[in-house]
Length: 127
Image 1 (cartoon, rainbow, N blue to C red):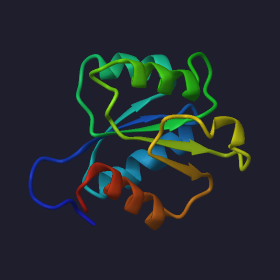
Image 2 (image 1 turned 30 degrees about the vertical axis):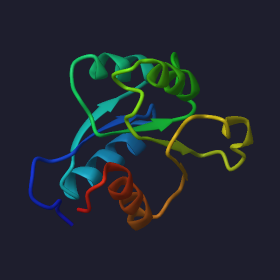
Image 3 (image 1 turned 180 degrees about the vertical axis):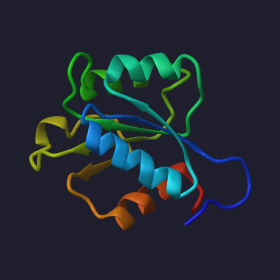
Image 4 (image 1 turned 180 degrees about the horizontal axis):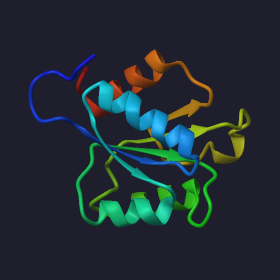
C-alpha cells in the first residue's frame, strides 16, 4: 500500500514503548509515509521545532511530558494548532481524556488496516 503521487506525507510518532514505536514506524514506512519518532513529549516538541509534519500520533502515558500536556501545548501554538492528532492508548477507559482536542483515538491493540485507514483519512490522502 504505497502512497499516491506527490511527496510522502510525514508522521510524527510520540510513543515511549520501544516495540510499539518501532512497529508503528515500520507500518507507516511500508505504507509510504515518512516517519519521525520521539520517545516522549519533549522530544516530539523538539522535532516539531525543526520539521513540518502532516500528522502527530501521541501515546497518552509517557514519562516526562505526557500525551495530554503535549496535546495542550500543540493546540496552544499557532503553527501546530491545526495539525491532526491521533491518540493511542492501552486504556479502555478514556473518559478522563474525552475533552482532549484530538482528531481520533485508537485503542491498543488495534487492527493494522483500521489504523492505516484512519491515518489516511486524517492526512487527506490515501496510500
